[in-house]
Image (cartoon, rainbow, N blue to C red):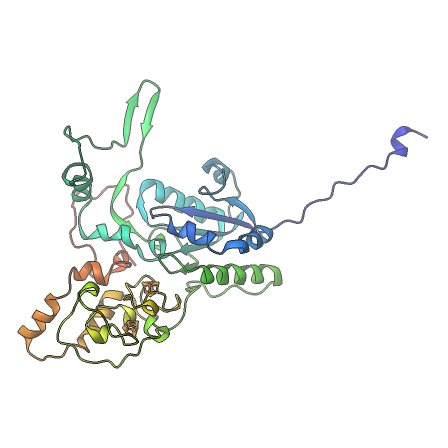
Length: 352
Ligand code: SF4
Ligand code: SF4
């Protein structure tokens, strides 16, 4: 008997293959990444259900690892952040190609959010403010970032900074969106749990374009404060009055975007007396959060006199920034200013 025959050779056991998960962060503050960790110990369930194949904020994968993947190899990609520069665009296109299901995750990817407020001005004005005019800037030689810089070690490159901030679906095809700035942890878990259930039990995916992790009503519908839809004669800022407890803030003249905002957060802000700023995006069946809010205000202003109405509306500080704080990239009013020197590398379609 040979030695080989005496030794029982173990047949290698293949680990069961799990679906692949990727998470990426484009132009955003990083809050959506933190929000994923807010699901706490359930992150272990995510790890058990998926192979995490790309998550730069947490795991040291490189872009070349994604480039080497087959198309569709990533089962689910949660993409947060708006598309503000050429690097964001490259990663959006790369992850679209490599992902079976691509989700616009959070307000920046879905609606543009805070980065898209710069669509109210120009690329040039934004750069001038940052590198010349801001009180915190010390830049006597007016040095500006260059896309290409020749150095002895080679060429250093920076992403091209675009004129217009876009949502993910204004650049690539997107399957689903998850609203919120950031999405609330219970909703993130609900989305992941649904996906895990679909993958393990072979259930059909929801129809393309479905908004996941949110409700089908407005923030007012899940607000614990009592709304009487009183008519008001002026607006006040939250620090200017002590609101009556238990009563609707809008009824008291505090600008609250609850009537124009999708439900899903559980009335997080309004339940502690802070007006809704609209982070769950436009209400269902409404494409434009700002015009929806203007319509809601029209029904609560107590005047028929145009001059009086003007005086009341003048009490709203920064109307565009208030009504479109989270959804400027989709606003039907479009860009406030257009720079005619639009970059050739930018996509030509501006918004859907
Ligand atoms: S307007 Fe604001 S405070 Fe009033 S019911 Fe709606 S969400 Fe609540
Ligand atoms: S109350 Fe409004 S601003 Fe606050 S978390 Fe909910 S949707 Fe966002």
